[in-house]
Length: 442
Figure (cartoon, helix red, strand yellow):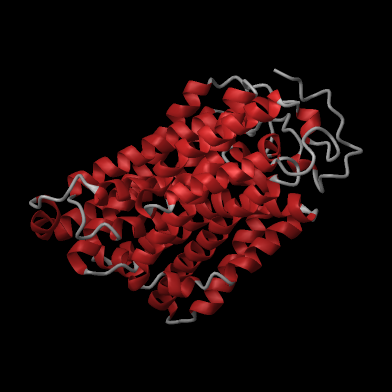
């Protein structure tokens, strides 16, 4: 392993702040890391993916699809997070090894777009929850005010970086787990009889709709798979790679199963796809409704800060050489232009699923290029000092990585329902052959 403690970046003008430099101080142990991921995986987007499965597969097939998607996600996180864990580098720096210093910005922007969209979407849902609480307690109703205020709070918390996030996620994790179990119990109790006819005693299919469901639950986590180095660089170095895989699996599985199944079951029974209305209708006690809505808002904070604010902020820092605080604010402003009030409408559930499948067509190829580059071509050895040298061996754009992404995306668009699976093999083969050929010619 190349030492990262003896490399001096103090005179490097390529980075705008130290947080993109190799991480020497690791602040998360195994338990903290697990709690951070568990809190970060509770996504209202997963609920929406569950709602989109209505009329396609039965509940048993839905569970299998979620488990498969989550298992693939955990393996991907373990593999792609190894470079960050070993060297303490962020995603934006990791991509330089394969894409080049300038080419890494292409991968970064592709990663940032869905993060900003989900940030806006989940912030609107959290704001709706707070607005409902306000109406119940004091009769005040103004979703716009709550949305703006909620955004400001999240941006302010994100400015504190991972040290603040660690405690937020760790403290909130237990509350999130208990709330999920309670809501699942409430849903089964209230709609159990109806669900037997709608979701259990139906044939379903193991065909394309099933694999589309796997892709959806994999796709919603693909963004995290891509920039997992942003998190693994904070994990203490004595944690084994296999252990990180177990941590990811334990974190992703329960959050996805609870949120996905609640979305599927309640939307099937009521026809309601709006998460606020769904959770409110699933609980028949006013006090518990308020607690549930507060949980929804809190869950959006833990997910957004970890997965949807800091990753695109790092990308903006790298691409435009702005400070960390400014990049966080920019992400917050951009999220307003995702028009989340339209995304949460019932008729948007299918469109949101399509959005996940489409961006998976690009994220899958980028993920594959990073894996092939690190494990096969670089054999898990990176020249860290060169990754921070704008005029070094990784300068410019690696055209072969870009070509490989285009090839992979072209295959993915043959059927966006299974875009991720269609893209990875063509991408990997193309990148490996092109890079081997370029090396033999030099």
